[in-house]
Image (tube, rainbow, N blue to C red; front, side, top):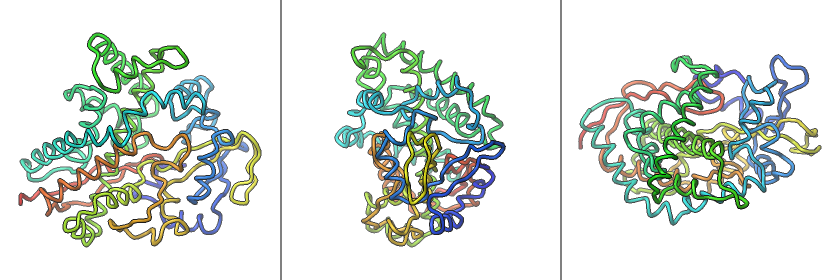
Length: 399
């Protein structure tokens, strides 16, 4: 539960020991009496939990866990329950269906020419600088531009979305000079922005997710302003933070494994490489569920009301599911990772978009900046939720 544990990178050795010796194990929460969580570290057990939303609820206590979660006020939990990731079927299914069509493989394929153009624009700017921060110059730009295009956000506002997103998920890192309270303020600022955007789209409807959300009906009723605001926040933050960190970790993986960069540049195994980068990064480290009845999981008796923490980072190095999981292999064919969740109703809505962004960005980088090199070690985000890279100084040699 301590963000310092992750400040220098993921504790993969510790996760391996836990996975081998006690794959489902109880951890008491600091400063509480009797509260805590079951830590789940294998792919099979995570899938078992994820595919039974009637047994393991996202709604009961929400899906986000931190040191501040325990003893959380009921009114704060009620606000969290407005987010789609904290809702159970059948209500979750109604909400998800509103935007599902915007993220189908066919829809994402139609976006690929625009994503490719974005990638070239990003590289043009990087090459003009000659050197810079890979996270800011490249990794953050692709998902921001994609989301602006998909959601009808003016490009001029992408820096605002980036800044609000950082404040909402980066409050455990002192560099961002923020706090859980400021994270709540950033959420409110995101809601205000969403209201302004909604007003503009109502006046001038477009063919994008925002207009579709505003036209959508659930059980015959339109989305309330509150539902729209939290939906916008989820799409903006989830689509920004996750892909940015996948691209950053992917570049660092190539720096650490230069032979894989040579293979990628020569053979272009685009689909398998994108999947491996996403597994390797696992940008969201975990989500939690709450047991709605007594249940035996991994040989352990989980009691009704207890938290279950799905540690995706640990499961994505599970040798029982993935061959040689500690090897970064861009040709990997069998790759049943859980970076998008363990299946079930909460499988990542934007998985197809994330794959396309990662695939296209690295394809263009390999063409245009094949000799990109690091100039300093990367700096990890201090967070026990997002596996992030804050800074990655690099040089952009022109070919």
